[in-house]
Image 1: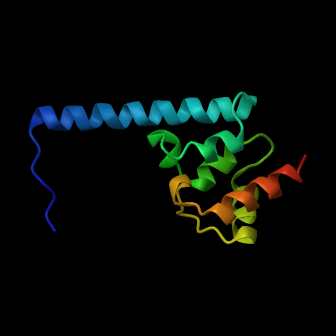
Image 2: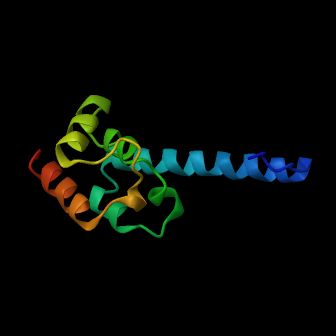
Length: 105
C-alpha cells in the first residue's frame, strides 16, 4: 500500500502534531517521575489521547525506581505484550499492574 501524497502544508501540520504529542508525553513522564501524577490516574484516563497512546513499557519506566528492565519484568509477569499501549489494557491487566506496583511500596 502506497503512502498518501501530502502537500507541504499537510506535512507541516503533521510534524507539528507529532512534536506536540512528544512534548505532552514528556510532560506526563516528568509528572510521574516527580510524583505529581499517579499510575492509577494515567490508567483511568483512557480518553486522553496522550496517555492512551503511550506504550505501557514507556509508562512504567517513567515511574520512580522503575527502569526499562524492571518494567519489562513486571509486564512479563502480568502477561502484557511489550508493544501494548495504555488504551489497549484490559481491566484485569490494569488491576494487576496497580496491585503489583502497590506492593513495591
